[in-house]
Image 1 (cartoon, rainbow, N blue to C red):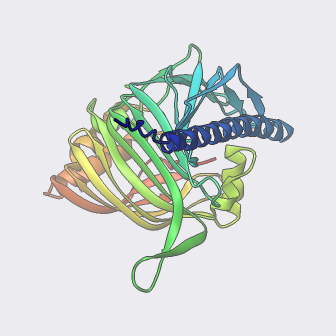
Image 2: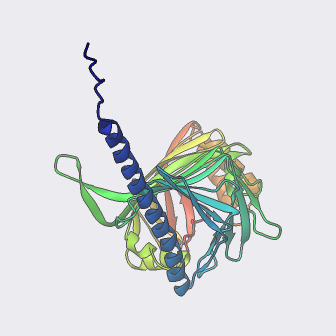
Length: 354
């Protein structure tokens, strides 16, 4: 009887996929280390460049983790101080991006931030979440989004009080202004223009502030969106100097829209254009439609805040009451001669940009 030996099948087919996977993993690991090294070197190079421009940059240890699909950079004790004295510091910052798409970063401050205001001192910012995202870093203007959840603002001893004590949420967004094509689609980027959105919800103002006077100890909030034209002038060395250069170069706010809330009073605002005058104060006209404005005006008149004309505020409140319609009123809000005018009443100084 003839015994047929068992057939031995080649196992090369089993090893080949494993070998391919190992080679791919080795290649990806090499790319990850190369990318993280390049990012760390880029951070140091940027810090050297900024120091040469008058900035003060400091930080502790930089560590990189996240292999294989994330790049996570932790920076201990970062401090960035502009030449004009504005500064931001934190116990730590963590920046994270997808390894396959390092053009979009999310940055968080898990232990809060400290903001330094020249001649006004420091204010600490803490909250449930303090994060910022940056994308399209190679574009003329990157896409920037800042979100603070349940932020609390605490002025350091000896520092000037911060206008807001706390809020439900604060959002700031800035992105390149897109020009509309003939068919209504985005056709490109408008020269030197940036769209900006500011949103504040359920905030509590400092007791001796204009905002608290308007809100009559109630919550404040709202949103404002606008297009900043001439934004190229805002990319220099100092915030205040950049704003002055921006204004001298014809920079302006266009397509201003928003809604403001102060206690039980609300108002919608709109303006085609606003500019900053030589004194740094806002100039232009805002169309204002207010709902229940009387409590806000009466609260402003009682506030006694420095700079507020109590007589004018009282007159505006009286005029609103005498109009017979205390639920809604439409008036122009005019910034001129360094003051904020509501109809014929100069209520307070105009907002100062620089």
